[in-house]
Length: 359
Image (cartoon, rainbow, N blue to C red; front, top):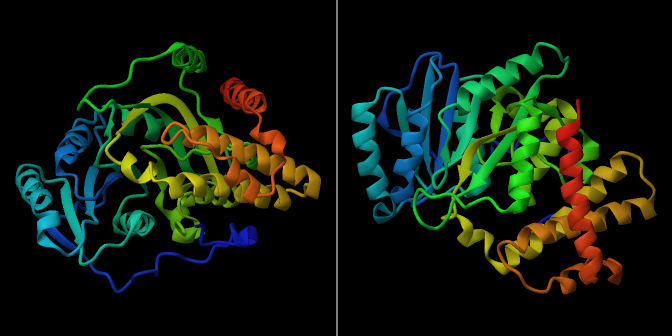
């Protein structure tokens, strides 16, 4: 079950970087780069088989500036769990001088590992890459250019930029073919011509966040808002995106720059994680709507709608009956109606379409 009962403190700036400070992160292989312009932080957990592909995609970037690659290993203290990763990184660090491999003395957990990666970065910006995904060669150069262009004309600096991504198939290296919906989305993306879209709190209450594989992050801004709070698992990434929008700025770049792997889906497939994702969608949207001054009835509608959006998302992992979860949230039975869920699904897609047309 969710660890947070009162979501009114979702936007607090209390630091989460001190959590598990007693767990030390040690530089095992490689050397740190002096004054890197940007970092690709690869988060890994016992997946040396897919990590090689992630590393190769980071090394294949067309960015010509000073790029550092950090591999942050949360495999734990048992040598059997990290030995293959250690062997792989020893080889890479001997061949490339811009890779550094860190391993924690003990397991930190997903979101604390993300925070530790932020602390270890030495550059103003860093991209987050999971060990089962990979990046397009123009990932860094495209996001650096888009971020610089936005920041030069806006008072608030971008703290997080999400970008479009495709999803891998279970066959290594292959990407799922586009269906009709994906083809329509690709058309919208081409029409947008790579122009960054600024996001607002109104987008977040409609369950639109820049939390995506390959998030591009302003390190100073992330430190300022306190990082990710593990208490909001499994939606701490959505919470931190909303917090970033509140204090700084966030955006979405409609360019496919990464591929989301499927190796990490085992955690997402867990029923309790799917259930909690729906609960978190409800509570976060309710809390944001409350901060925006919405009345109780409107808040309930917004939160219920967000819970259905979350349900539609988790059905891609675990397509079961979620009516019990929604009853636990005291949502109207209307939101268990298949036709209503279908309409809200179309509404969600339409919101993304409108977003792509935003100036």
